Length: 120
Image (cartoon, rainbow, N blue to C red; front, top):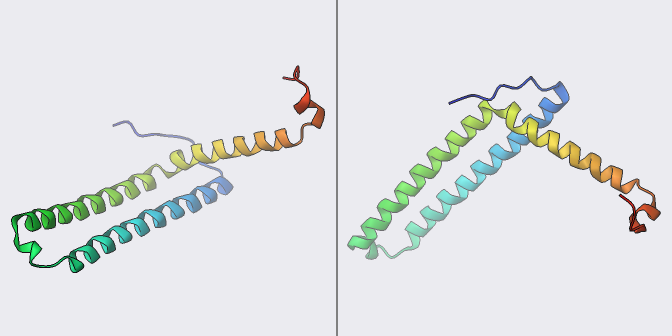
């Protein structure tokens, strides 16, 4: 698999990329904790007589597999985001800055430009 190699980010952009990465990391971990809590709560409140039936066993195994696979995928995603942080967040920040610049240019346009149908 080809790795994305880009030039290093300047210190200000690198700090912004690190802040975005930290926010994404905490969001992913919070969602994972909510998933675990939800499934554990559901398992605790389901009548345990149901869990003796074959469908209860199947649902217990499916729930365990769901937790295992989702947990491993979140940690794999976080690992890959860390490895490619500069590339992923560098592009995001570049596009955010371009959009912010476009919005600023639009807000500085004279009022008659917006009402003139022949204006570019």
